[in-house]
Length: 286
Image (cartoon, rainbow, N blue to C red):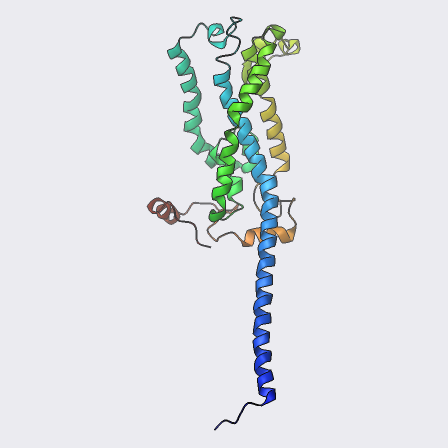
């Protein structure tokens, strides 16, 4: 029969309980510290990767909006785009807009595949399209962290109409400068391919080159974005992400699920594609 507990026995029990509490507190503090480090790393990635590609998407959407903006500027002066292109009818103008979008939609899937072949920054500095710009972002976050970032990405594009409209209105006052209509200056300054013969009136130096009849790209914002993307943005999470320290890179990669695509992935997993089609709301297991 056990005797009554002594003072030492009671103290031992209290020491064990106190030790358990301290151990749990230590684990909680460590977990909280780990979460804080992860959030700090994600903020860095948001600023360097997400913000930049969202800005590039905004620029791209501004270019798309130009087609609609140029249709209504300088009509009073008789130098509207539809008149100068041969008095296009409403149906003909509708075909012009349609022809612009059909190749755009057709080549976007191929663009995503080529992005993997040429690496993100190499392809993005060229004609990368909408959805493919999300790949460098998706490579750095688990699926449950992507929804808000995708929403932010596409929300940035919604400002394009306001910005491109204001820019087109301002540029319309250049109508007649260098012998060019306002709609031509919108395309020159904001982005499109123009014929060097037409530009030769405003830029005489071009008329002395062998590119007289060659379409040349004049998209100043897009060119600057391409140069920055090519030389300053990392392709994948890893040692090449110079804006993160080695410890921060480790924290970021450790948080990614095992099924996360990476630079070494050669093929796609048909089982994952099948599971996604069966349940679009599913997320990869960690």
